[in-house]
Length: 386
Image 1 (cartoon, rainbow, N blue to C red):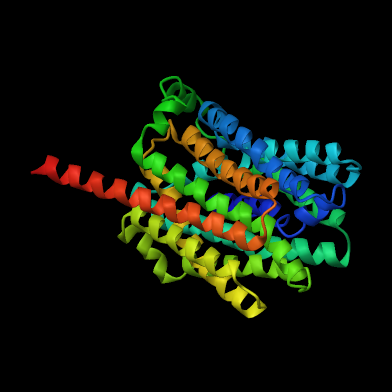
Image 2: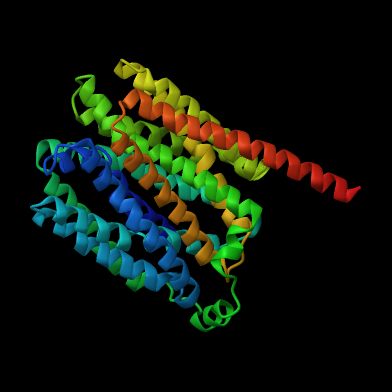
């Protein structure tokens, strides 16, 4: 069953990644202002954050299967409505519900993966899950850009809608329902979300998620604009975004993925954030396609270190009775990061150079603060053991 869950993860992230190269230009066909484009890109993530939190409670109460099946089906239906959008408010409304229903998917899928198998290989397991995300990062942007360029944006929405509805049928037919009675008994004694935030290691993973997706939101908003400003063909937006996915998936699947269980997850998390920050600084001054591809390879390397590490921290520092809410809150921070990245930069109206530097500064500041905290925490633990 784990392979079906990996397939669902691929489908869920293809839904997100396929829109990265097309959503900003699509929004500008309704209203040419950068602020509106940033709002449309960020609206999905704003409502996705709400969906993530609701999914966390629902998962712990009823199990992952119901959440997955419902989320996949409703997301498929709402994608069809993009083809009927005829005004700015209509587009924003569709984006809101798309994000809301899409927010059910990833927490449920990662909770199901985390609850399977042994707890001492969470890092490698999350690396394989990250490979599924990497597949989506390869397929999604290129698919979105190529289909939109050769046919129309509406065909992107319709094909992804059919994929989502098909996945909902597969999940309904083949995923085991789970021991709902046990889940209900556990959920009545489970922790509240505020207590999860107070866990230092969970908080670190949430900050890592926010920083990563602030950078991702900035990339989704600024990279197509950078490609357009440099007068390259628009399809290169998708190809560049796919490049970081190819890099990440190679790291996830090659024997080097053993590092995720060999080294502390917080250390690999910080290394990933540092590398992404450097990649964004370099991307801000990129003036050629070749150099942009180098930057995206570097970005993909950082993503490959960061994504499994923050997921493994969640799995390691939670139990089955709290994992649904923990992952729901975790992916809410993902969504919050995208909202902040795309919307803030859109309203500021900054150039792509300044936008990438702002994102890099946030990542590097977070790395510094976390490094100081982890160093102090290690010192306290050493003293307590003496």
